[in-house]
Length: 115
Length: 119
Image (tube, rainbow over the protein chains, first blue to last red):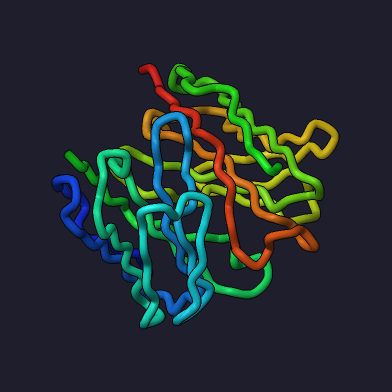
């Protein structure tokens, strides 16, 4: 089954404790992206990657890191989480080329709470 | 600046009634337009999309949307709502052909409309 998977689905952590949220897709997509969803703000892009070893900042990259060493994986790293990073996080992927690049497939989400 | 507005935060309709969810965008050129649905505890699923051509587009689950350039709108409609349609709906835009920022594949999302369906 074609899908985007994220782990963990739920995470409660404390301020300053480094964490990684994994994202993997099995559709051989070039493009991958991370969004955060907050009430009243919709989804905002954190980082994106056009292909392996190519990443760039989205609208709200502060406090986050990403890496793209393999095509299928795009982990999101919070080096020193803070309470304002409490949010629902979504990973998405899409093929590259033309209009298909905008048909993004989303993972199930990771709900992160930072205390 | 590019933006998407969903004026209705929360809508309640009766099962079997018709539905229209509003979406307005601000963009310099004709963008690519999307509607996504998010069921409780789930990720976003693409309902339908508009790239060009016929301004009335059909999607999954019986939904349709109409692109109106003069009104900068892309409203989502369904003639008869089912209880399973209760979810949050997001309108999104991406830069159309020739639009700036196309290389980022970036989607700009509205803030969402939460749909409740009464029995």
